[in-house]
Image 1 (cartoon, rainbow, N blue to C red):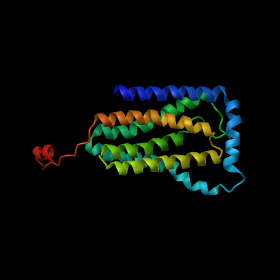
Image 2: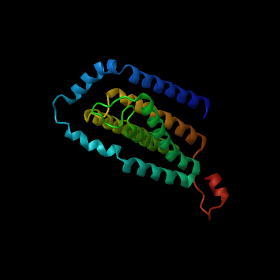
Image 3: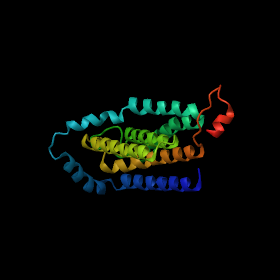
Image 4: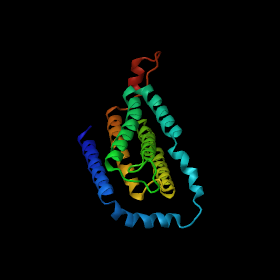
Amino acid sequence: MTTSWTRAWLAALVLLVAAGAIAAAQHDMLLEVEEPVMEWLLDDADTSGWDRAEGLLSSTLVWGGTILLAVVGAYFNRWVGATAIAVLILGRIIATITQNVVERAAPVGAESGFPHIELVQSTIFFGLVVLFAWWFGAPKLVWHILLEIAIFATLLSSVRLIIRGQIWPSDVIGAMLVASLSLIIAAAILEAQPFARRQSPAEPESSVLTG
């Protein structure tokens, strides 16, 4: 990675380690803040409507969408295609290791604690959509809109998990940091592999260079 990407990656790693240490060592202190937040979100209201956001975390969407990105990317550059799959797997590995080290119990004893693996994967997928749009040279307005959609989808997924009692609010921070580690690597690789239109067998090389 370039120096700037390396610094960003190391900064995210340091923040993840710090957040994990706080989540593990200061769990009771965090609860004093987080439990009122969760009660405020619930507030005896009907939360069934949030179940509609469940699909944003589905393996079908995340893995199916990532594989589609990988296939399209590989058509133009095999390294870019491989990157989509690799960073999603990397994010899951980092999240699993972090969970095993922190060992923070979820609100209702859910299997996934700090950070929530499905949220990590979903965030990485939506981030990859934005990065690929940027790599393909989409107009700034297009990938800015995709970025807003990605942020909105991540917020919906996070609130749904909190309301369902599967994660604490601070667990979202851990998920975002893990996703950031993976997406920074993806961004560095895509930047190092400029997009070039694939040349068809019948197309002379000169036409690619000039047009």
